[in-house]
Image 1 (tube, helix red, strand yellow):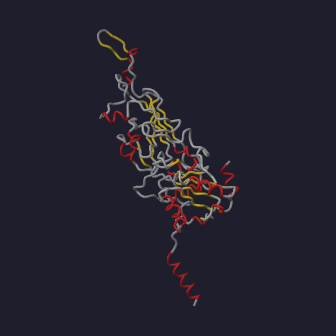
Image 2 (spheres, rainbow over the protein chains, first blue to last red):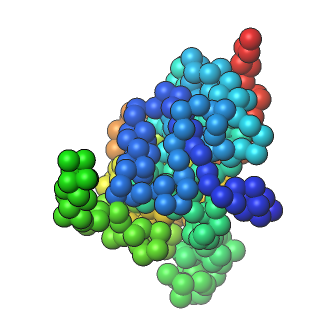
Image 3 (spheres, one colour):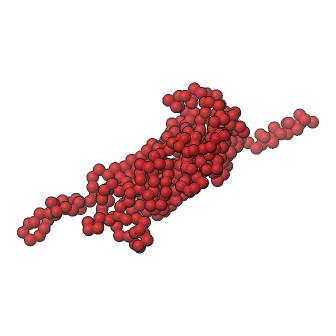
Length: 178
Length: 174
């Protein structure tokens, strides 16, 4: 549903606003690399703007921090209504390695609602383009939660019920599983 | 004058060629030593919990449901792909793949969860003997990280109690 809405609302071009709320500048460099001629995203109509009031999309880098949470929230509130938020980098997605320290509040979704996540530290420029392409609907996402369960115990459980005495020796019944 | 300079500029531009990579149309190869998303091989994993103890972002949680079943949960949100889990793994069950296209619309997509049978000591009930007293303090036979609230119980103080939520932080707005 969100995807259809995106395609409807952002049919033409995305103007992005680049908000760093206390990251290490690594993700900023990667985002700027996306805008250079090497990964020229202006061919898809994506353009960097300087003010959140002109923007459709906010690219968040860095965790939500105690000192910048208010500014981030104000920038989000200043954006006009159909808006998307991208969390770029592992700080914005999950709070980074220092997620439980005093100055860090956690991931940016504690301050602004996040629509798309691009993990990585920093994510490659291709990964950022891929995330945007997922949002626009050009490609399908490749990740899915993985779960693994061992259904059979691979080793025998030793239990007194399985022990049978025969003459002198004690035989363990399920010994064939060893 | 200006026409010639423009022509000269055009020549320079044509000479420079095209540098834009055709990324979204055709995929771009990554470097040999690129570290991407870690993949956990549950058939090789012995559940020692070394990856959980060594993760700088404390992203791998261990929870023992009972004596013989251990849950290893990797959430993957703040993973920095440093590769320390793969380095420390004695069974080489963790490989850092070269997969970088992990953009997604729900953060739970990056999760990997293993449920492993543990063979414990029949006498003491612990999984294996600890090498030193300090290690023993850190990790007994049982570990009860808080999977529901996403807390690494022994070191972390708190983290997003009850999961991510907007407006649970009081921000003073003017």
